[in-house]
Image (cartoon, rainbow, N blue to C red; front, side):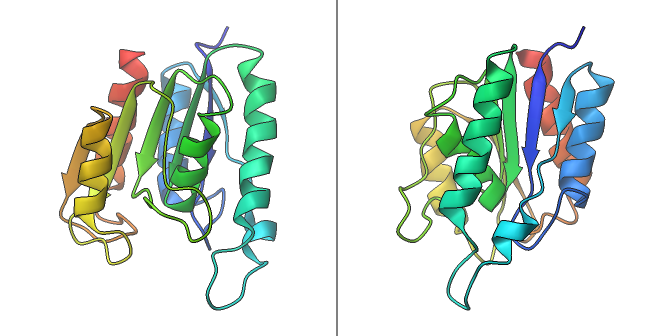
Length: 175
């Protein structure tokens, strides 16, 4: 019997085999959580130079899957960048036990500003994120009393995959 289920959403122009979501999947597995990594690459391909794919369709896909899984037991949503954004927004529509957000965008063009259900939230962000200013994420996390890990890295968090996995493990263990 699993402790619950984790849906791990990759970032834009990434994929379900991406390094960060793979590291999170390994943590979930080790701690007895079932997990999945949805593939949004078909939706990400629908973009022009100024957009990040079909965000409403990506959000809808996650909401539908999350609702199905939440009906079966405890659910944790995790994601990187655009995956973090859709995870947080989904938490407002589907009951979740926790959220793990890596480099979450606080705004997404015409979409609603980043918001999340009042559940345990853990955020990993990079001081040197070239797309999402750290100050915006610090303010957002402070408003929600979220656990926040700030690292010396860029948007891809490539030097902090293990630190991100450890932060995810801490969240799962606390639930």
